[in-house]
Structures are given as C-alpha cells and as structure tokens.
Image (tube, rainbow, N blue to C red; front, side, top):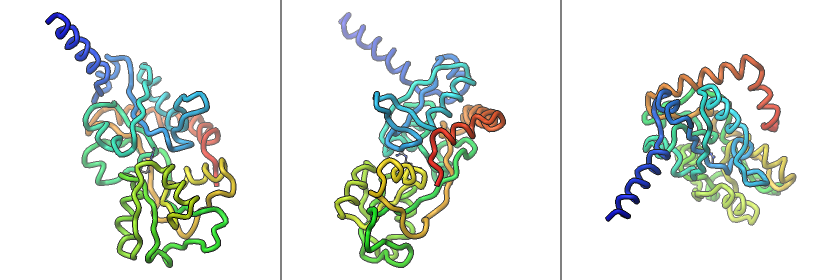
Length: 255
Ligand code: ARG
C-alpha cells in the first residue's frame, strides 16, 4: 500500500518535471525550457563525437532559454513524433529541428518568425552517370522521402501525379544508404543538410535537377503560447548584435 502510494507520488513528480509549458510564466516557474529535437539533421541538430546534441538550432534555443533566465533541457524525439505531437501533447515546451513553417502545421501550433531560408532538393548518388532530372524524368523512378516532413508533403503533391513511386523512410540515413546502394533514384531532402553532407562525405552525393520548393524554418510552440513572442525577441536580439551571423558562419556551410 505504502509502496504504491510512493510510486504514485514519484510518477506524479516525474510527470511534472516532464510536462511542457505553454506560457513564459510557466517556463520561468519551472526554471527549464524543454526543447524537443530530432538530432539527425546536421548542421542544425546532431550528436557530436561525445554524444552531446549540438548545432545551429541548439545555439538559438540556448539563447532563448538564456533570455528567459532558465536552463535548456534537450529531449531527442524522432521527427515523426516531434511534429506536431510532442508540442501539442505538452511533452516539450518548444521544438526546433529545421522545422518548416506551413499553413497546415500553423493550424495546431504557433511558429516563431522565420529564422532560416531553406528548400527541398533532390539528392542522388555522387558521380551518378544517369543524373536524375526534375521535372523531366520522374516517371517510373523510385524517390525517397522522410516521413512526416515537408519533403514528403511536396513529393505527394507534385511527384506522385508525374508517375514517381515514393519510398517513405522514418530515418533519413536509411534513405541515404539506399541511394548509395542504387536502390532508389533520388532522395528528397533539405538544402542545407545536403550541402553539409556533401562536405562531410565528399563525392558520395550530388544535388540534381531543379529544387522542389523554397521554405522557411521556424521555432514551434503550443498554439497561441506567448513563448513565440519571447523567441522572436531573442531572434531580433541575436540579429541586431551580429551573433546570428556568427552562428551562421560557425555552423552552416554556404553553397
Ligand atoms: N524541413 C523539413 C520539415 O519541416 C524537414 C525537417 C527534418 N528535421 C529533422 N531533424 N529530421 O518537415
């Protein structure tokens, strides 16, 4: 009896520390800002050699936490569960993961102002002799997309009707492995991560055809949370002080 009660108390306490906040006041009260991120998206979020989650997004989230006067706590969440459920369920206070601002998503969460301009692009095997071309040779080709990403959404919209066969990956790395093995013709991915990949693994991957769509990344908060305005203030501060440019120079490989 006593034991179950203790357990219940412990569980309630655990639930409390893990609970997400929807207001600045709540975050300040708990003293931590919980960031949800899928750290498989270098240079925005990835694990460094020591296993620590780091990257461009993490530095921005650290600045938001600092301006709120709280600590940042990072939770790794797969992208499929991150958007939007981790935020709408209150598991995290905010999500940053190279997340594209879309009208559909904005129905259920609140975005900060855009903080990075990106695009959906095609990746093929490096030195691929029959280079894949969009929009001309999509018909009958198998093209990979990551589940629940804007890459999948745009591919569903414009590639399917042109006769492409889509292969959906939970994990982007599995799609890359299939490109290497020649199992798929191309993979749809975010421009800055592709540029980063090409730098880290020279010659293995190439960008092909025209870009699919331009997009903007935003920080994600619970619907109508005043944390979005707080994040915008931090963004404005980082831009005005030149720190934002320093972060770009430090993390992002320019094409
Ligand atoms: N920008 C795309 C989207 O919002 C892909 C983001 C994927 N991010 C990640 N950490 N895996 O859907």
